[in-house]
Image (cartoon, rainbow, N blue to C red):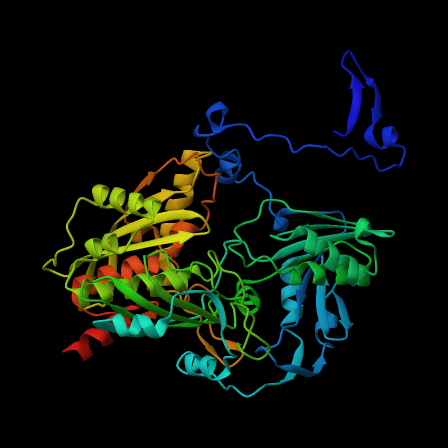
Length: 556
């Protein structure tokens, strides 16, 4: 605990601060220390259960919303009805009559605070506010054309050979566009923070993925130095990239300063949807070709607003170019609300498009999707995971009767190689897609904790069902129409398929990461399996029952 003490007399102690006497003490090594060879590792490779599991399943785990401080006030803030709306006036006179309420009006910040959260909520509902609402220019139906119209010139991510030469070599070509809608992070725990100010120091308990950024933002909001701000992160009830912004922390800090008391700001589910930085709506435009030997000879790949992660070809293609436009944050005015990182940023969209397109090319070649992939692969790591997956899956990729289908998707996610195979069943009358089985083989370099890796993969597969089948943010301009989970459907326990995982230990390569790769393949593997089942190719995610029924009807 920051002290040096005598074992048999603990009262005789001295702190590190006393030892350093305020000096900065550094020693620089002249040579870089060697890394221990993996053959001498004694802990790596052994399965260890989560240390926090018992606390979480028994309810002992403490989150930011569980923090209670003497004199703490609960805050509820006045919010606009839509992004871009400007406050014209607010009448707080009725709210001020609630016993014990404190009203803060500080520029654009209007808040009600009370020692009881339900009283604060009641007072907030009594404020009469008027906003200027911006024009609703885009919605779910028009967003993709809007993005294409707003797109700046693309930037080269990677290229090789010559596309024109590749096109000359092509005996057959394939061209398609792929689309995905905005997706919410929909974390179990909403953004929450508690801030206490004592003199010229502040302490924040925050639900955040970026505590150091939160520290600096609180310091700026309060006019303090960063050294005088401490951010404590209790357990975080999921983030997935959505808790990298710290709006609620800054709000709590400002209100703590203005009231002189500790303040908790906990967003409602409606606020969580409203201020979320969604996975961006995006478009992938692909043109490709194969020669008379069914080898891929060119690949012209254009990304709009998804970001470039997992977009570099791992198939053996002599002539290719990857262009990225806009990135997943977009630019000013591009998206009608905030966008940002969502578990596997960019990769979910890219892998869905790439692996759907590879299946289309396999069909053009008259080959099954497994044989076509193996024919066009030279990467040994990818070949190994794909062959292992095929061995585990134990099924050929021939057409099945009765609405069942099989699919494949592979990817290289930041050095982790994986192959996923899935079996689905489609109910044509209801338009429902049921994922019955998923096999995932992953090479993530040296395996540190096998059971931990398996848990991450299973979680990725379960979460991935959502963005593939149901999750889509509904909006009209800056107005978010999803207020809660009654209109934004997450995966349910009843959806879960049989999941089989195989981990390939590859200790010659340092650990590459395991928390995101498996989710990125879910779009491609399910879309390919659905096509196998019903002969309809879905170029748009999610594949909702309404879209499935419409596609089957148009097929007839």
